Image (cartoon, rainbow, N blue to C red):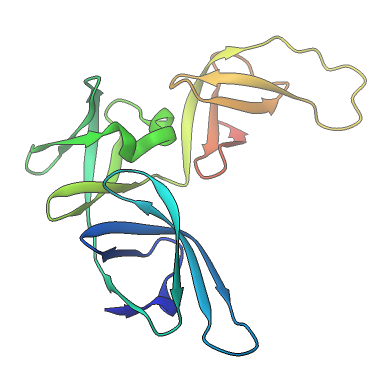
Amino acid sequence: MIDVNQLRRGTTFTQDENLYKVTEYSHSKPGRGKATIRVTVKDLRSGSNFQMTFTSGDRVENIRLDKTVYQYLYDDGRFYVFMDTDTYEQKLVAHHVLEEDSVFLIDNMKLELLTFEGEVLDYILPKTMELDVVEAENAVAGDTATGATKEIVTQTGLKVKTPLFVNAGDRIKVNTETREYVTRV
């Protein structure tokens, strides 16, 4: 059990048989009385986001998620299929687990999956990824005083704003947290 004052972004806990991950944390202390802790959480099983409010002194049960490296194989339409490279065991991951980050999945890439009692609940993406540019509009640098950008499409379908010199066939590095262009590789 942990005190709700220890809840921070990324902390996982269980309450009423549900598993939650904290995505935002806010602590407010009125002039009198106990402090109020508001957290925005993601239900790790259903994928829904909502807010929870606690008072200082409340406790929740902390859980530890097991981290294992898996290799992404394919999308079967309902699940993403991953394989443990040591045991060759395959794991099915529901689409709602990866949500909008599925645009970073590349065949045979390694990804850390977080499991609780054998159930895949979350994942850890690398900070940056290298992706191939498949579509880039032709842009002509004109009278621009600042850096002009254009939108490109990567091999996974991710759309990114890049400088004008990036063309189809180039390889770029993208920050997975902000989904922004970092550099051309």
